Amino acid sequence: MSLGGMIRNTVDNSSLSSFVRMYLFRWNVLRYQASNNAFKNNNPGFPMPPDSLLFETGSLHYHSYQNSGQEAAAEIESLCKVFSNSPIHSILDWGCGTGRVTRHLPDYFLGAKITGADVNPSCIQWLQNNIQGIEWIQSSTNLSGETKSAQYDLIIALSVLTHLPTNEQANWLNILHSLLNTKGLMWLSTHGKNYLYQLTHQQKKQLAEQGILTLGADKKGSRQMRTYHSYSGMKQLLGQDWEIVMYYDGQKFPGILGGQDAWLLKKLR
Image (cartoon, rainbow, N blue to C red):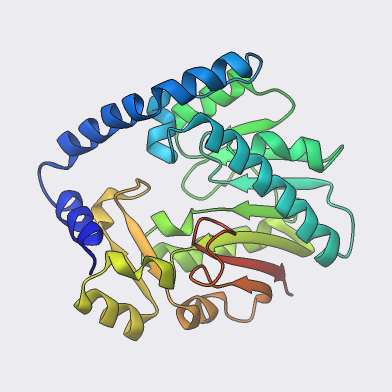
């Protein structure tokens, strides 16, 4: 385990976790203050989520939030052009957070119906008040009532399985499978080899043996809860319901999704 991984594990499992996170939040506000002020001056018409929500879901760097979201949307469109058998008319961004990627999708999928779903009511309220042209819904524990079966041509699930416990993964994949149209696509990410530095030797051994490992299971849905997947573990989890159309090892391709493993899946059956 690296020094950074050791510090993170110690903080996440200690009673000081809330205090340290508050300190890190304030430090990041100061760290990016100058560049963020410049971004706001140069982009006065670009609605920016509150710092507290940005910190909870990712980076506090405004330019990174805007640029990485736009790049991801463009990348998703290029993948769909190659691998989708039909036009994309409906998209679900499951676990959309602050809409970093979702808000850019209308620019690349013209005329498509786009839905962003997240369990965090503060994120959804901000998005509903500030980003128009997209349906924003606060999702329940199983998305029942908010969505219909076989409704979407594309589902995006970036860094969502990474914050769900091992025992819920298969059920969620079944739900997402049911929401996709026949031959629909799903683009998702997981913590793979590029994140092994966060694990102890024993935890790495558990991951190798089990294929999936969850840490901080009592902090479900937060950044303090982390789930890791080996390639073989993820492949076993997908079973016979999904075809792996494309896979990026995050260690070999750190620029694709910030070092996360990336999976383009096609619905079977």
